[in-house]
Image 1 (spheres, rainbow, N blue to C red):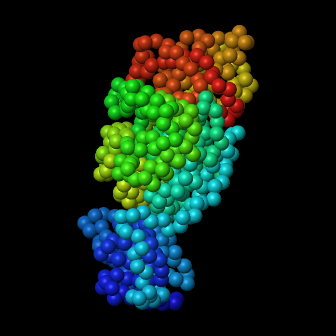
Image 2 (spheres, rainbow, N blue to C red):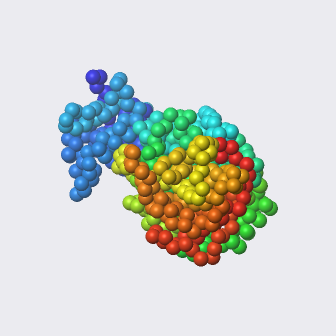
Image 3 (tube, one colour):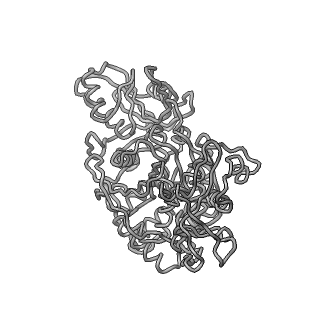
Length: 564
């Protein structure tokens, strides 16, 4: 092994230079070629400890007792931090900064000698965002049904992280704003970062404002992008309006979700009984009018980025970003659709490690909404951070980034088990010919499990049910169909079971002959689908899992194909 030298600079006894790096423990900074390098506080502590004891072997026990005094921490946490540091330093066989001493510990060897005169100076104030590379990642396209979804990939970390931006987005304009670019680059320093534009926004295919994507179609887009990049399982990170989509994806596809992270997000975007934090109908109407009259300017900047609301450069970027992200009509349609989304019933079915982050003074989405999310997701961790900015890359972004990285270091493989979120279709009455049933299920990507149809999307389930009901009428048959979205249990050859199955059976008893009815949960999840409903009764149906309002499917809405 080639040994490299490392020396303290003469400018500060506690500063060290090695290779292109300069470590400033007193300033809590690592520089590469004069630019700050994103590194978590714990990883920086580890680097400082190794460098200050350079040339000497430190045992794992000693390192762990120094980094986590008085706490029980598994050895895997240390191994993960070592891995992160090696990637950050660009360690190679020819330049092994951190050496593993088998079955004992680690030693820091250093790097090519750098004299004090050669040591790079700090070129950017510590508080200013610094972007190591201003190059925009290459944009690719994934096919989701008939729609092209724009995506980018950055980094080569050990885990995949899908970043779901809220409201509207534009991939290439992410990188025009230094704060945003730094935020994404930090994520890419410990993960393979996957970012995309939802259909109808940014660089993805634009769609008619009457056909903007439902949560279900957005889930299909996430899956299409993951398949395009060969990702079998990923951390799903949803920001603001991206949170409900991420929550639904995690509940529906736990086998593809390594962990869920929700930042400044919500369960419902309109104030109502049991949820007193969303905007009122009047407040929503005023915001829609602002979009109509002022789109093209920095709309909503005061609530979303108060710390930069008066910064001319940021105001110009935000206004351009919105214009490039969506048309005024699309922005209005998206805002209306988002106000109808309600994923409260979905949250208890999430069965993956979950982190919920929210700033205490968020002026766009109240911190109580983040607390609510965490309280409803089993085992979720809630971290409340100081600050008033809603956009996570504005303000003290390192607090968010560090919390995410440290959480993911602790996360192992996805939880085992057969718990999933699914829409269950139940029916009775005259028997449906088996070929008709199988054909309808295949068309709408449903699965025949015992007596039920099982779907990963509620809108497809409704359209399948409607097709079966119409075919029954044409054949002179009597058919009742009920649908509910909830938690199911599947294990090998065992029959489908769980709360969703029990509820849909009870709802079926209240379904009139010849009708397709859905629970309020199903209705809340298909906002923007074009499906229309009428309330079956003012009196909720009591089930063993609580009361449910039932809605009759009044119209199939806009045409969809087998993917829609």
